[in-house]
Image: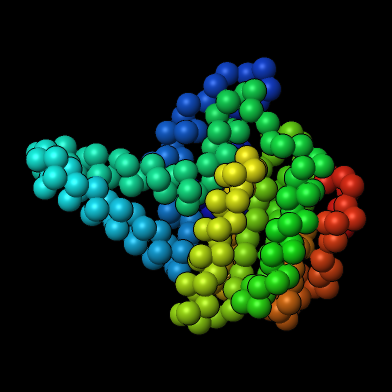
Length: 231
């Protein structure tokens, strides 16, 4: 995934259009790896290698398969598991199939209210921001949620934030929410976002965010009615 400021418009399926298999293929292969911040990239590699090593042992030593097939199958299975549970699964499905839509305005508001509650309960999250079509007030039934989570610095905090991000992705898979979620090691990671997308705030408890954006006021999603009319 390239820098969103410079990348061309996303190639994705639209209602009444054709299936865009290229989206699934590209996202399965890449899974946003080059876009990740350092901490998330490290743990993504770990969770790619650990399952792959386990499957390699099962195929080679237990099933007595050849090295070639063992390596190929181990990689494909591990990579697919990460694609489903550690990436933006429903975003990919939404962008591939014209008939697939997000859960809609009311269900998405409810989901975001629950996310906001979880973020507010976490003392290691200093920021949770929404960008994308919602921040441009053009959210529609095939939009995804471009969410960025920033945690407190530190090695242990980085691991905790990574687990929190993984949990949010799992919840999104369960609720069929197309969630484009990444964790940031610092506010500098937000420079990847488009200049015309002023964030919708779920949580912002750090002066570095204020310095970057000016005054930030969190939207109370328990009271929200329309995703295109958020402050």
